[in-house]
Image (spheres, rainbow, N blue to C red):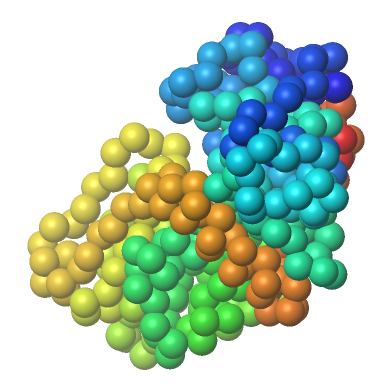
Length: 324
């Protein structure tokens, strides 16, 4: 089969499109013919060796995908050959999804509802479960609360806007530029704040009559945490999903103490394979019902994975999908 592997760590140039043996499923594994795979920031972190993984090069990159089951191990009960499935969480301790075929564990199976395309199912991937885990599992979001999504035009951010809206929240987002603003507004945000041109804290307080938001979903924690403390309401929560460019974040402690602010961190992997699959199954049902819609910005053939990583490094909207 064809696959995209790295033989060493580095920039996009280390991605190699090449022939590799088609794997055989073990007793609790399924072999899936991949119809779509998404490109995520975690793939870049693995490629650059910024996210240490048990599986060392040479290895196939890619965490998310969707396709059709071709073979199922003898002990698999979650799917059978011919089933349309989605999956997430590859490429860390296993080979990834940038390939014509991928091995997944039986606990990673997400059965695809009718009416959901392979590209949309793959784009649900890690982004929507990460947003759900931030908003619901860690953030304890309730209907009627207000939410600010910091970085609302990206993969996780756009998912967070849609999920918060679908769960009955009043949603604001930050983005840069008119095209990004239009995207976020189209996903259900009440207002979009241009973080390059506006004072985000002042604008949020204006929109909430001085109260602030109940929950901040933060995708650029190392940059925005001081601002988040200023704009969150008394007793509000800040959930950090994305680190941002720095390795540390500064907290204005006095202001945080004065408002009973909670700063929460999260890592979707803590939900476990079965937990992520359960969240993704719920989200797939919401997508099939038209309550949410994965945002796909670019579709490329698998052979152009290097270009996909180059696009991911620049300004882009929506998910990047590879088609084997």
